[in-house]
Image 1 (cartoon, rainbow, N blue to C red):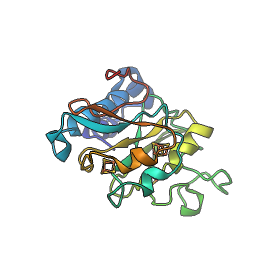
Image 2: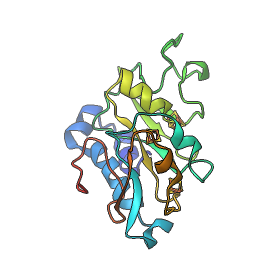
Image 3: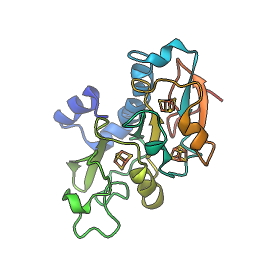
Length: 196
Ligand code: SF4
Ligand code: SF4
Ligand code: SF4
């Protein structure tokens, strides 16, 4: 979910601390909700769409398997303002990783969808390749257990077909799915929930 805003700033040598001070990374997550929510969405035909409350999700894995779409319309997203930019990342690395690096055997993600980028010693940025992400929640669970909980799941509305009876909502053991206004289709972790 790397944005041009982030990429430009990194290229210009802006440090992690300056980013956080400026609030740009946190805003980048919120901007995704606003910018991609309706532009290409079939969901825009309805005034309400399905979304996951990240505070209720227990990372059961059914978002990957229960969606009518393959791969699922659910993807991991990242609240950068909450992230510690850790060298050893609970969402990225296997708990028993032999080395803290990007070797495939040391990564948690089964799809190779999490991208690790060096920022400045000892900080690393973690971004999600949504084309690869299958919504399995493995990284979300790792980040919740061993990190700041900055990775979470959201229904992506450029993919979701907005089923009347969402198959994942029916299968979700935590009651984490609910309808939200189509013009504010994301529930961003760490931000005030304007929909409740
Ligand atoms: S089905 Fe519910 S609890 Fe399971 S991963 Fe999806 S949102 Fe989380
Ligand atoms: S671990 Fe699963 S949810 Fe996380 S980025 Fe990889 S495929 Fe997506
Ligand atoms: S509404 Fe349909 S397409 Fe969207 S997440 Fe639920 S099952 Fe998948």
